[in-house]
Amino acid sequence: MKLAGVIVVCIGLAAFAVVLWILRNAMGLQRAWDIGDFWVLGVLALFAVACAWWGGQLFRRAPASTPEPAAIAAAPAPEAATPPPRRVTVSHGFSATGVILLILSVLLPDEWHPVMLLLVGLACLVVSHALTPCEERMEKLRKARASTRQL
Figure 1: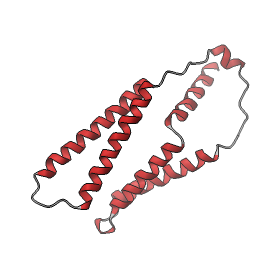
Figure 2: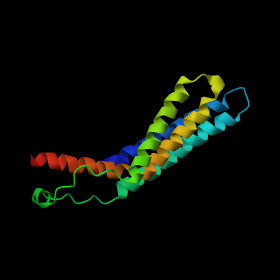
Figure 3: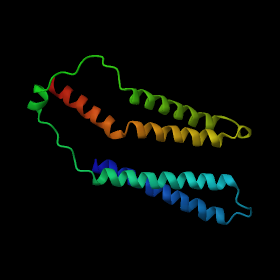
Figure 4: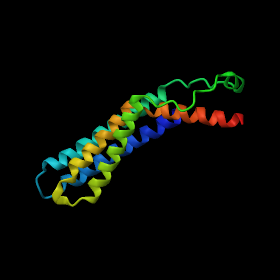
């Protein structure tokens, strides 16, 4: 978890660097700022702050104790084919919608104002990550890896 926290903090710092680079270049332009400039800078700054905060939270979190192989073997087998919780299903829907909107924002012509699709797509991805944090997905991967080691 500490490594993941460091990586996310580095992504946040890189986003801060991009914001500063854009500000530096935008100051030299011979035109007035418009609302799109503020939107881009705002979204990048918000992304940078969120990455820095989440990375710090992951870095400070105490590592979870890993169960011993004997305890894993003694654990009851999970029930087969249980449907995922409603929260996970909604999260998958938001993430799929977000990815599709991001792709459309790149492919659509400028006249269709694809910036709104980009922002809504990013918002859908944020909601998806809020519903099912990456920690839960990582825990599922750990459990799957531990179960394959028993074979």
